[in-house]
Image (tube, rainbow, N blue to C red; front, side, top):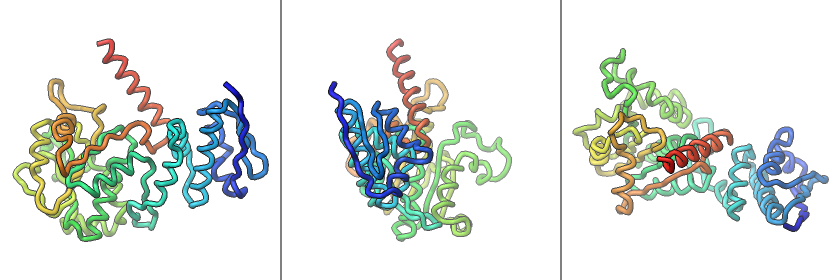
Length: 324
């Protein structure tokens, strides 16, 4: 394969440094992942290597410079994602994400989608009454759902936020745990609490909890209710049974929205029990008003190592299924 050299200008030393990262960690990541050599010449990055890889590296740098110019944080996770997009010839997609603000936290920080998959997920929640967000840990399924729930409440689109999940680890027998219902369910819903407090601030969050505008309940307690004018989030839905999922979905009342999140690779149900999440995503695919968004390892927005861990486990699962 022919070697190629290409020079990309950052425009300013500040922008260049932000893209290179601390101790050039972003630059080293690009060189390692794409197999090219990059040296800095003033405010320029000079790329040397196989022609196809040079084109990909140039695309990564050009789009990261755009992010830096827009004031976006250029961390290793974002660089890793841009590299993945560049390999598919879609690096420019990353700059389209910075313009849309999903929500504003209580500290005034804008929340934005970091991947194309997250953008599809958010758009689907805005468009549909029921949305399934299925994908591995770290893809922002739960956090983005909470952000949109808070936005809906602030805009008076709903009167209430309801958070629920199956308490599989306690065998749904929460009576064995000490304390009242709130105390029993707390450990299972901590990620949801954290996201709510970040979005609302502790004081507002506490007031809404006391007023009953935010309700926390295990999935088993949803039976027999009609949930109207509410934004309902079912988290860890892979641990619901088929019967529980049907019961939950049929609670939907007027003016409500449901978001069901889960990771089908982390099912904790007893042997022989089928996941209600997998079954629902299959039978409801194509039903009007229902969105099914599948996120993957490329949508992992935690430490880039998490993406590699997810891939390793997926490869292992695939290998074992073939051998079986």
